[in-house]
Amino acid sequence: MKRILIALMAAGLLAGSALTASAEDAPRSLTVTGRGAVTAEADTATLYVVIESRGQTASEAARDNAETAAKVRNAVIAAGAASDGFSTANYTLWPEYDMKDQQKIKAYCVQNSMKVDVKQLSLTGQVSDAAITAGADRIGSVTFSLQDEETYKEEALRRAAADAKKKAATIAAGLGAALGAPLSVTANSVYVSAYKSPARNAAEADAGTTLTPDRQEITADVTIVYGLA
Image (cartoon, rainbow, N blue to C red; front, top):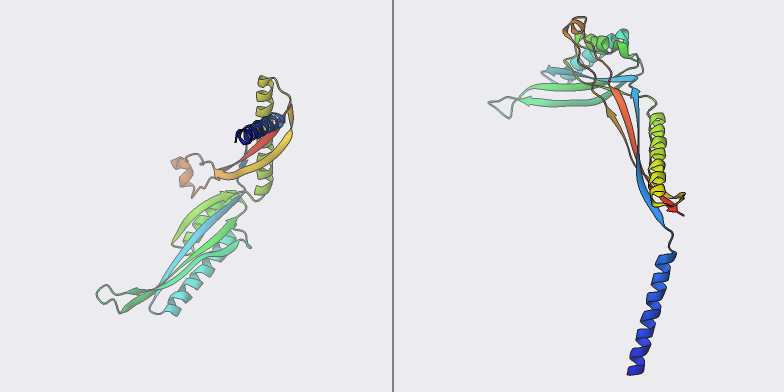
């Protein structure tokens, strides 16, 4: 029994030594996170133009809506919208029931939301006004974006990597170690967010609708594991 116990203790000591040696031989590493940001002026505006129609029949409501949509399309193209920048964002047709008799259909309603692209940003307000004048009920929203968004994302990632490397070099120097090659790299996220445009005064508004494009901020985060010598 004593021989078995001594053998087990010896095996445990050997195993412990092996684990200690393995931990000591493991390469030292440093994990850092870097962030990069790029700011760019938007170069495309997208308007969501809403057209609503009512009729006694579904076909009548749909026909009236289509006629108004054609007028709006022609008007906004004449005002400066891109001729190939149209698409239907949402189209809904539904019956409107009588409040007193829920079984009786009072009318049919159509809501058509058209997505309109404007690539000459100075004409965005003019295009918006033209849509309303031609019969659109409202402009649902206006957003500004970048046509070449991928180029800015790539630059943000490059800056994030450079930021991570600078942090790693600073930390390594503080530890009295030499920074080695990257062992792993993870791109955590890339975000595109809009800066709010500055407020416009009444004098500018009197000249017609003025829509100022927002600036876009593209940020990227990366995590890099460096070896330490």
